[in-house]
Image (cartoon, rainbow, N blue to C red; front, side, top):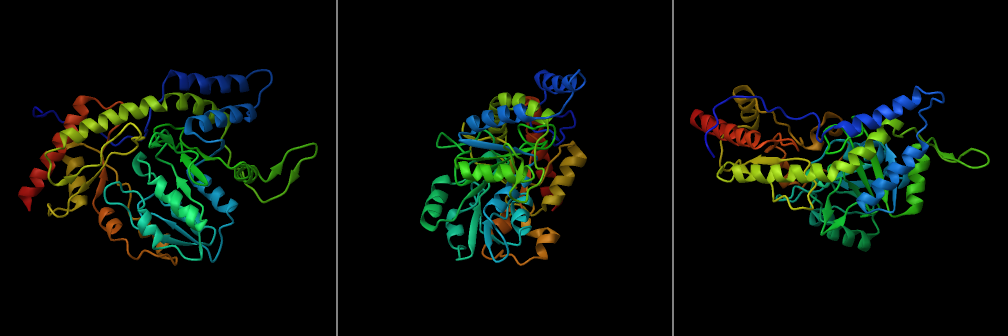
Length: 389
């Protein structure tokens, strides 16, 4: 790689995928319809069409569109009747809602360790945390790489404990060629802004192969309504629905997410090549075609470098205008979870990894010049900080 000397900003992207003319047209059509002679924002047909399309794409029998992955997880906790006295096992390396939705129902969150290579929840560590109070296990497909589905299937079959997958990073991901939407009891997806597909900033879905489970999710996302000759309310529910403009754009975003994933995988593979000679950085595992390529997350190898992550991020931003993000601080480190009775014992890999990780700004639109500049800036930063130590 030839030296790059022209400083230019490469910020961490606020938008994970891309919006194009078809997305604009889809949103405009809804607004034009609302401005017509029979205006409404009722989303009935739009919802059914999007849900059917998303279920097909993710290999599930059923889908319920909701307004975030957090509400998707919350709905699953409600359907499973998670409550005080129960325990839910999950990963420390995740966004807070993976744990907080269980805590919000009064359950005790139990953290199990992660695999140091994949950064996904380690099934062996999970087995060591199961008790008679365990009512659910929530693995995360971290960064878009599928968790160990087969091992979690075995755990569920042996114990009867349902697996709820946090698939926030994983639209379009596969495991051994199999889509993820029908795995476990259910999968919960995110269409938030920085995901590879987004429904105008927020959104999500629950997929499952269980018709009764999806009906219980549908009831709770729509005030508990049972439709028929006479409207009935049979359970406590909420308004967790997506809006008509979001569902319209969801269809156009879904139609391109595989292309976005492919473009991001190619860019991530290239950046991995460019960082091959950087000993201080632990690069992510390969990006096979099954990978949804949401995050490009590296680790500072604490065995080889005597600088802090904060020093590295600050120098990258100040000297080279390269943006980064941390995905994630250990979820137990958030103040609210420190106030609760949760189990963080025996998670040495997660303890270490959460202090080392950083995500680099790779998008579907990243050019060769962008990737070379990121790699060059990171190498220059490490060299400068190495000399300063």
